[in-house]
Amino acid sequence: MKILLVYPKYPDTYWSFRHAMPFIDKKAAFPPLGLLTVAAMLPQSWEMRLIDLNVEPLSDADLFWGDYVFVSAMTVQRESARQVLARCRDRQVKTVAGGPLFSACHDEFPEVNHLLLGEAEETLPRFLADLYKEAPQRLYRPEGRPDLSSTPIPKWSLIDMRHYASMNIQYSRGCPFDCEFCDITQLFGHKPRTKNPEQVIAELEALYAAGWRGGVFFVDDNFIGDKHKLKREVLPTILSWMKVHRYPFVFFTEASINLADDPQLIEIMVAAGFQEVFIGIESPEEDSLKETGKFQNNNRDLVASVHYLQRAGLQVQGGFIVGFDSDSPAIFEKQFRFIQESGIVTAMVGILMVLRGTKLHSRLCREGRIISTCSGNNTDTALTYIPKMGQEVLVEGYQRLMRAIYSPEHFYARLTTFLKQYRLLGPSPFSMLQRRDIRAFFRSVLFLGILGKERLHYWKIFLWTLVRKPRLLPLTITLTIYGFHFRTVAEEIYGSHGRDR
Image (cartoon, rainbow, N blue to C red; front, side, top):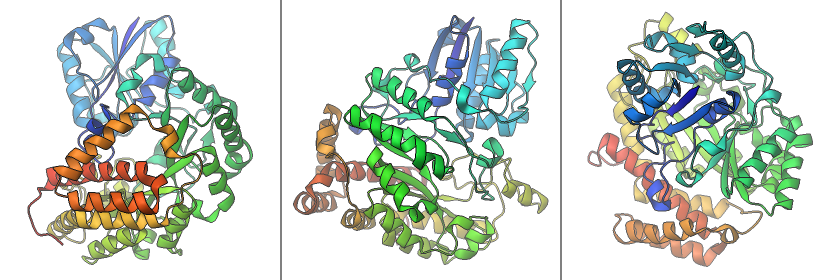
């Protein structure tokens, strides 16, 4: 068999970091971990190629080379996935599709020859067995949730690591919480399932042996779902490995806000090399948190929790949502104040998404409030549901909020707040600098410090960091580049004109 694995293109969103990539001579933020893992599960005697459309184009010659084209996608990649599948159909190339998009919306893709829903460890072996018997079915549904102990190391040889800003690995699946808008429990369940420490180390060894040095993203939707195992087994093992290898990686991940309640866990995460954590804050409004079932965020001082994490050595990236039923037009000002006060530099604010397969989607369907299918892009202002606030009020308030938080004035003020709080623990970032970081610095000087409209703010924060916290200078430069990306996304979608805050 010849298998072509194709990863669709991301639209221009927060997570693409597309406008930051040229600063460091990279083409994409992360490689397609799911497809690389699937490739490792296929018979290794088969020929395989991988085309990541975020890195390189897909030619007709590529399509005709393969006996099958495997496509995996998230919801936000829907349009690019459709284009790939249409090309395969027109050229009579057989397709196999899986991943979150197809697991939730398989009925929307009649052109796919074979659909593998759920987790590949469950459905791929059955498809391969039927393929061997020359009797593959069109639809394979999961019959349970797999034990991750059999999940192989991703087939890193299929990509050129030089194209990516960071590598990624997965330690666990599932989340103990059940937020109404989230599809994670639908995809992976409530009970966290984890790999064992030996597997994690084997994956780190594979990246290290391939020559990777730098960022590694643990893509778990809630890394701390099983705190006990992390503290007792996994993190101590990672820490020992990192010490032996002289800290070749910097880790970041996603977690729930209750991480702030466990100083011991924070301490060992930071010691093991974790420097960033994405947390779903969602809203400063208690009623909105109760409405969506975000109980882990209720009855706590969220700003204090964020400050605690940042003082302990974890840079907090935050997710925020507007458009809950209990939101009033006052939510935009409240979100703005919270984001500024918390010092969350990378604040990803979006309008509420109604994803298929979620409790939210089921509820709004019953209420007759679904207009269309969600794109998966939380910066999309083409609403797919009828908000109680009113569509025009919600969209205009969101646009105003985005222009405010990523205007140079407010972005750099928030960056200053963060730098005053943050304590960098562990090795100096200067010891990990690579040539790409030096190039990024000079490009930031040119495009932000000389040509950019934020140049006065750029030099002010540059000099402040150089004098007050010189060890944080590489991080400061990185965050100014992030700010450029987010501001560009906002301006491209909504235009740089309009009322400022």
